[in-house]
Image (cartoon, rainbow, N blue to C red; front, side, top):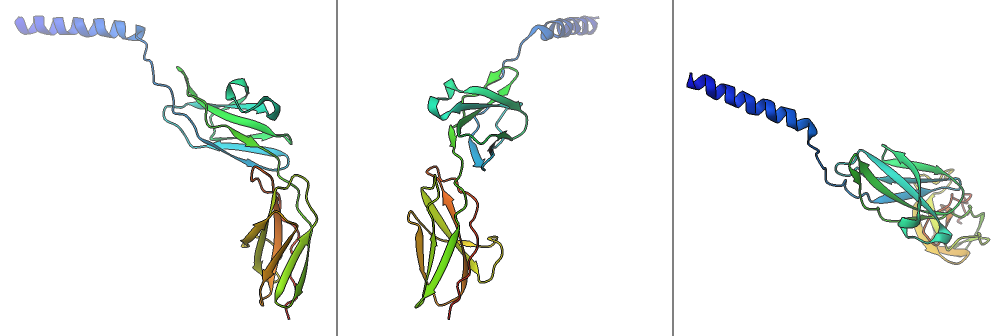
Length: 204
């Protein structure tokens, strides 16, 4: 009889607990704060980030350059469950991201400025007395130029490596070996534009 009473008492407590449980609210900690990076082309900006703890989605924010880099002034651009977002725009903007779940959002991510990269230079070359000189006209928006080189006769910059960079519109390379060259222009935010034409000097 005592055992039955104990069982009835335990069952009553369990039923009462289960009746109260649906009324309980579980408050989750805020999701982790993302860290973003961006990739820029002439017509798109892609923002990407790693997944963060407890996040069920992400909010992408965008602000005009003229408004400054305070993310609290940015406008919500999109919500996504992906780990990236592509903004189809040819305009420079600031971007930031928040993670969210049902109980709230994270803090803002780092803020990044997306500035459109310069156009490709058009280069020429001259080789004389063991030295190759690469030349090009100044490209609007370029803060520096990255000189690439690869095997002689190359038709693509795939496999090229960086030879150096310069703020000038010429670059000299001392070599007695035939090489192919190309140049990319980069803006003040270090976003690089497409590669130039490829030139291969004739080395005696």
